[in-house]
Length: 212
Length: 212
DNA sequence: AAAAGATTGTTATATAATTAACATAGTTGT
DNA sequence: ACAACTATGTTAATTATATAACAATCTTTT
Image (cartoon, rainbow over all chains, first blue to last red; front, side, top):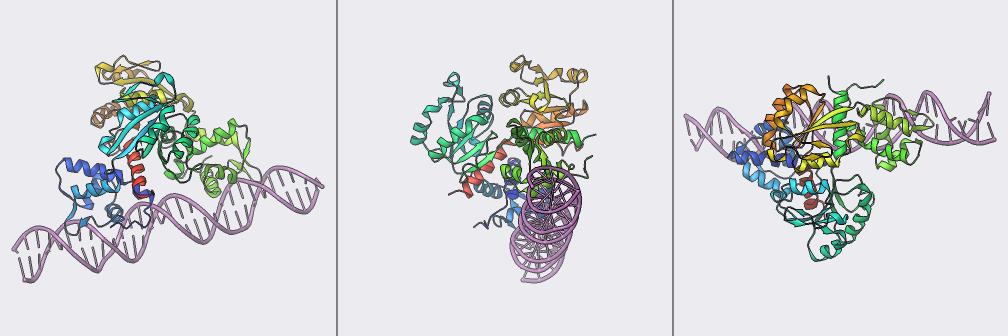
């Protein structure tokens, strides 16, 4: 079905963007789109659109274009948004709370089922409809529930300890907001890092060098 | 001083990472480092380290290596972290509050001086030592204070309106957490996007395709 | 049903990024 | 001061990514 002889990360990182734009087109009741038009909307080349999509299969039809809904659904499937992944949040500080309250996980087919926290002061806090649990309950919880991935919203210094536990419990997929380098300790994990300060420093670089 | 005939974004996006690792080495009182050792720590090739650094100048010494402190300071300067940039926050919802409270802006030499919000319910809220101001005060504030950049933590639908105002006020550098595509409206701006949901979808892709 | 037009899928080309190689220059020890 | 060593800066080779070109194929119109 898919020509999945190792697709490059550059292509994969563009998939969410295709997904977003196709969702918008669908909302506007557009039912077909050509690579040229989609490229124009997304500000990329038509060649790139066609090459990217063809990594995964022939989703279009010559002489016609792509069916918006079909293509969107295919990309959704590729992204694993139909898998009903179950997630837990580690760290209910400012960042953890914001991530949990700000993100529309359900829209991505992800279910956030529990939040864990070290600081006794925060245990019992409400995040959406979840109450924050103690980190000491982590093992019990994970042994009695499906947990596909953990969102790590704790300071760098605490990560090694928690990762050791999660890894032993068989949880090896992480959305990591800390600067702790997970893969260099556990290589058989899947990690997606969000380094907010790196992003801000990049903006500073642009301001310092590309401006005026 | 710098060989700045257009440095590629790939290189620029690695600078914050060098900065982080060099800061750590400095804290451990390491005073010299070779490209080979630094590469090993950072899990990249020594070639890349040398090429990256040489985009900006000869920071090392043959036969010796790089002075940790000197190199760190040079990268800090390149990143514009000595410029005392003044920033404002637009949007004091969950995300805006978390960004403001979680980030250590001062460590990056950035001063967050004000927060603005649309929702009357949130006006007056405290974020660190700042009280949230009404968006109607934005123009007055910007006309009487230096504002180098704005952090946009508002929903996509509100961005166009606020960007129009900020652009007119001469504020053209944005740290953008929304999905609104700023550069396609105003091309003479500097934008750094943080697309949290794209990042999470990328993790889902990995879980769906690279795992098991 | 055939011809004209459109747009994909795919192959070829060009550009960019990474890695390797090495000559040059500085360091350290005797 | 000299020899042996180390590690940079830089050029060359390789690999990866993006763009362009075009033949194959479907659609639409007459």
